[in-house]
Image 1 (cartoon, helix red, strand yellow):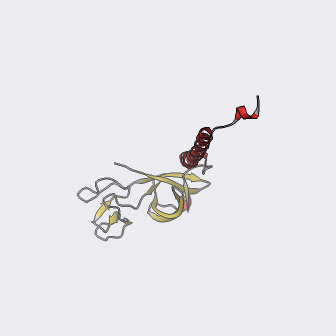
Image 2 (tube, helix red, strand yellow; image 1 turned 120 degrees about the vertical axis):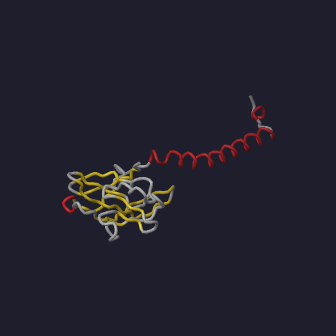
Image 3 (cartoon, helix red, strand yellow; image 1 turned 45 degrees about the vertical axis):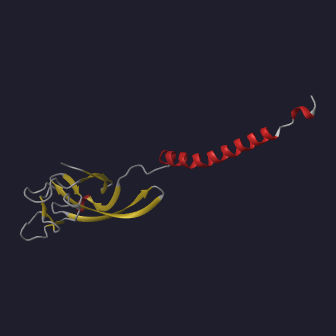
Amino acid sequence: MSEKDHKVSRRQFLTYTLTGVGGFMAAGMIMPMARFALDPALKVGAESDMVPINLHVDEVTSEPIRKNFQFEQVDAWYTSEVTGAAWVFRQGDEIIALSPVCTHLGCTVDWNTNPDFENQFFCPCHFGRFELDGTNVAGTPPTRPLDVYELEVRDGYIYLGRPIRRG
């Protein structure tokens, strides 16, 4: 066979070139999409979603303590530092952490700040009220109890997870 028998026609050259360029462009579009889909599975994450709140179990009493804490929140490719809060108290032998977000319209509840409603969580936005355990007081705007955080104790310190919706 001679070299002339292996010549590529213009049509074949154009077909090979366009196929190669098209494949390269397709790979350029598919790779970022595949990376986006697989990134959470490939990323080495933390052992858990629990966040330390810098509160020792010995500091927790039957009187609710408002504890602010910070954690990293990841939204797609953007990571931000977010401040959260919890009302932490002891009920018998159990430690409870309630979300301070009113279940009516999302305002912040405070403990024992309204003299007319002592020993209750009170929402000043629409006069919502909650008992110590977070249950909503009948006849007030909230229709369900305050959310309660997942809670763990490690080496004597309290760690919080995600708030769990009740009711």
